[in-house]
Length: 249
Image (cartoon, rainbow, N blue to C red):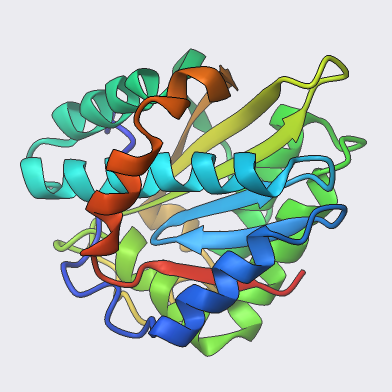
């Protein structure tokens, strides 16, 4: 079975501007509201009670590990190494993650698109009544309604060969004790025959050509652990390409 990873094209951030980045960072600071931002093929969702500072820390860690893994490994041939490196890095940034069992998922409707199937899989994992389930569904609705967001998702999720698409969803909230926790789900669509990148998010899935795999993890985040490396992380990110896009959910 294929290993989940953030496979994508090298020029995936070409459409993101400094204005987009600034808008996304401003959106993160809106405490008391549900917030959703994209980092390449990862959709990050924050519950209203997640402090702005925590949301920024979480996003910075995920951005740096995505960039570092992309530079270190060939995403087409070293999927397992990419995935392990990414998760190990999150651990060094203060995340304690559990889970990651990889299972095959059925495509239960003939009319599913990537943008409808992924939220359904995530909702099953976190629960239909979970407060962030609506945000996941709404995020993907916004993606297919927003050309720039759809292009970012498609360019960063479809592999260079066109034979797989990988999407990651990270839903963050606070426990009653004030501890940041995350529900992270990776969904990979594996194609027998290569699929075109353009339009892949909203295109009806060819069930005869597609297998779907899912890996789910849960984790808690230590802000105190991240304190020691926050400035170093932000300095490294300052010289990187623009790679964050806010979703108006």
